[in-house]
Image 1 (cartoon, rainbow, N blue to C red):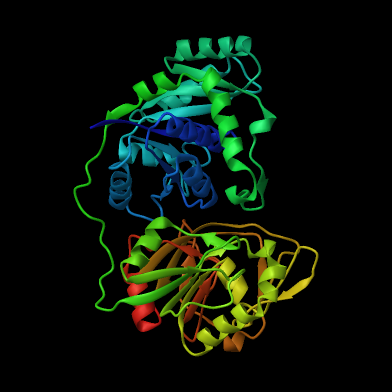
Image 2: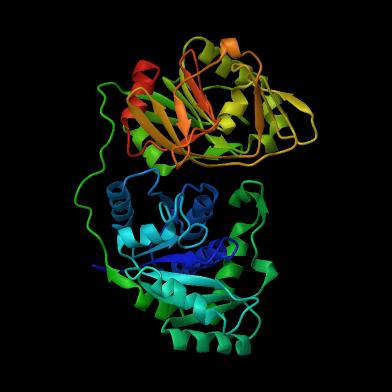
Length: 441
């Protein structure tokens, strides 16, 4: 079956890929199309925005954390019930963890889908020609179908850019005039969460703005190709038991991957709860505290004494738990905000976390323990201090994408595993069964 499918790439971060992607998703949805959104790389926040714009769950495609075959299967799986697919690239088109590894270009080549380049043209005219020539010819197998120019000053400005396209042999699909009113607010980990403002009104504005000067019909026509078949099911965890699984999900904890959650659902019944608002921890055999923005809700988290006590009691009695990033911070003794004010937390792990003097920790991670390698991603500004090293052991070895050791630790206490790493286990369900059934890797 023929379906429009394309990846939106750019020459660099900050070119407006997310705004353009959201506008297209919303615009096609209002036209009655079921459009499936995807995001290259490990980003959680862009996916949340995609989900709202398309009213379909956004999916991460990551060729570092997952195998090429798995990425192909996930892509095909979610495209089956959709009319079109839009993949938002990450960083510049060819930027990967190591050269092209994990890049948007690598995913476009793997999936054999066209690329639409979004080029920041605010300070260029005919100089777009050599840039487009480079992107068109750098990798002969890359299928660059067209370009949309962003931050264009006027139609006269666009005419210079069209001349560049004509001489290079790249289709000009239109332009987007600079409009500060459609920009999306950011904070230290990326875009603000869509729940924090009137996003539906903003989506309407973005879609309307794009539709005026971008040839949407030509874009869809140029990128319509045969949809891949899903020939094999993605392997799922096997267990004879049926577990009760509690997952933290609220404003403070929500950085999760859908395929991770789907793998958990195969192990038993998933129940969501809120460390912010609830007073009771659901009955559970396995607790998952995902990352998020606990630093924005320190007062509320600290004041919910009933929930903190319930979680601490569960963990001290040997309850099984996986805590990632924000979950790690929450399980510590306390968190300091950026002004140095201290807020008591669960007080299970002997650590203190601080948002003072924030320092970026970013990158892919490989966690080696015994015979396993589990991959994930680290992205945070907080710093932490272990208060009692003798009572909190770290396990395994953590390396970056270039196989160099990093200082990131994976802690293990009772039957709780905690780390700054956001793990991806959708492809490796054995990780889950070993944590849940054995209480350790």
